Structures are given as structure tokens and as C-alpha cells.
Length: 297
Image (cartoon, rainbow, N blue to C red; front, side):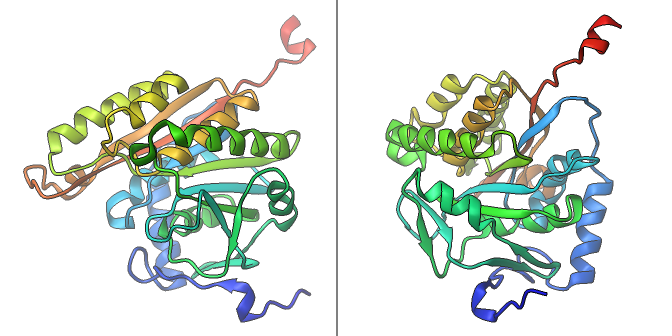
């Protein structure tokens, strides 16, 4: 039996605030969200998800639409990509810990995958971080998926700030991730909210365009839209583009928007003008090739 020391575990900085802090309450909350999310039947392979990362009272139900699609599926490794909101670790960083802790237990990092990735791209290992965008996805993965190893990547490459300069490192990371995932049971998850504005109608308008481009799986147009005018269309724009590029390299050819909403819809305060944030859940799929028997009927 493996002995885990406290120094090897990344402790949660957000349990009890962004989501319930006790195991029983968290389990009940996540399970309730999943029970109220629709499952979309498909024979296609689920390669990637996009899920929001606000506090559970705001975006938890939307996130559940993404994780509900894991029903009946199994993955050995989850590559979780999210923006670094507070710390600047350079373009990309991964926790130097061996485990991520939530009230539901500790999730082991896939050290073999991480070492192989570090040989392909410049990724920094960090001892401490307070980032919520990755951790907040874990209780959903723990309840919907169960056993898996984690590759948690924090990205400091916001398109809406640095523009098209973010594209090359995203492309390089996506290519490396696709190569390392090929032939394995790997799921990509991009953690991102959508527009952050003080105008409910503007959030609806801009997020509708983001949804349209994601659903069309038009990555060049989506990339341009996310950086063209310096507005925050998605705080996790680089994680979204990276996950979609990696999924496409592995044969994914379609995306389905599972749900889109915003904080004004959730709270009912649509007329409130100080701050509105958009949320979207997406599944990215690869068609399974029919066997000769299936083709012959």
C-alpha cells in the first residue's frame, strides 16, 4: 500500500467556499447536479469537454451537463487545462505535488505522462498555487468517472490580452498532448467561463457567437474571435483552443454544446449591470469507425 505524505498533496484552497467543504455535502451536491443534467446518447467517442469554473451555485449545473456525458465511459488519464487567474507561472505550469486533494479524496497525478510532456514543451513545476479553475472540476470527475490519473495544466496565455501570440504555444502543447494520448484512454477537459461584462444583453450576444463557432467546430474562426478586439470572450480561451486542437489531431470532428447560461440567468438578476459571467458545457466527439460486419449490415 502506497504511503502518502502531507507534503505530496496539494491541499484545497477553495473547499468550503467555492463548493461544499464536507465529503457528504459535496457528494450530494454534485450528484444532484448530475441527476438534473441531460445525457445525450451517442455511439461516438467522447474526446474532450469544456466546462465552466465559477462557484457551484453559479455554474455547477452547467458543468454537470459536461460530466453527465461520462456515463458508461472510462478513461485512465484526464488532461485538465485551465487559466491561471492569480499567479503568473509563465506560459504553462503543473503542480509539483503528487496528488490533488478534495473532500472526496486525493487524485493522483500521472507522473509518467507529465514527464513525457515536459520533454516536448516548456512546462514549469510549481510547489504552491491557489488556482481554482482546475480543482473545481475534480469533484465532478471523481463522482462521474471514479478512478483516473490527472494532468493539471495551468496556462497564462490569455488570447484577449496577448492576442495571436498565444496561438503558437497552444498549437505546440496540443500537438504534444495528442501524440502522448494517441492509443490511450485520455480525456481532455478545458476549464473556462465565457464573457465577463457589465451588460447582460452583451454577454448573451457574445456568448451566442462563441457557441455558434464551437458548435461549427470552426477553430480558425473561433481563435480569431477570442482575441480580435481585446474583450474577454472566455477567460480560458487558451485552454479551449488547446483542447480542441488536441482533440482534432486525434480525429475529433464535431462539438455539441450541451448547455449555455450565465450568472444573470442563474440568479435571476438579469437587469443587474455590475457583472455578468457566461457559462457553457461542450462535448467534443470522434466518430467510431464501423466494423466490416456493420458496414455490410
